[in-house]
Length: 111
Length: 114
Image 1 (tube, chains in turn yellow, blue):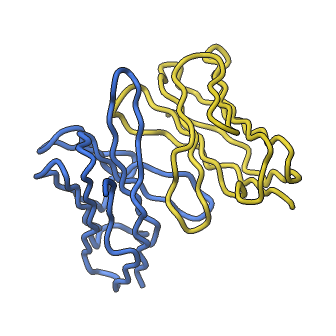
Image 2: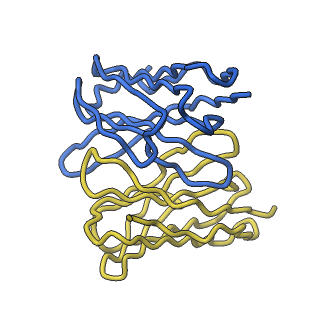
């Protein structure tokens, strides 16, 4: 059974701080890794994808992947109240295959 | 305006009735997926299709059926055999370009069965 584990939170950070979200996965064959943001009552929105070990930066977001440790993380710099949402980690074996999702971490950014 | 559309946004049905949820995409994506989300839970895969006229069961396919007659469309039928159909249903599609792979979601259909 392929599993993706996330701390459910809530994770509370003050405005302007760095939020750090973590995820571990069980399937060593996983090749593609994603972070989705989901606001309450809405569908998930893709914010980051990462495919190789190391860091990938996009604006205030940095995704980090360590395949040896089966660990993915997302850093959000200069956190804003609008970042308050549930962040879902997802992994896939390869292209055009279903994603396996964690249950999500709820982030609350306090103004 | 490219994207994935799902209709309706909210759907109410009586127990024992079959209901079909619509999903259409104009992104020219080959693969399409249906997931279900329950409160406080991650997304669980119901069915997926990687090519027209072919689809595979996901982890929780019992009580559901799908068809993929056109590349753009992947409707999901929730049958009366599904024991707990009330949930948030999410359709997604994906493309693979140069080794990169991204999956996008429609806005979802919230189904309530009483």
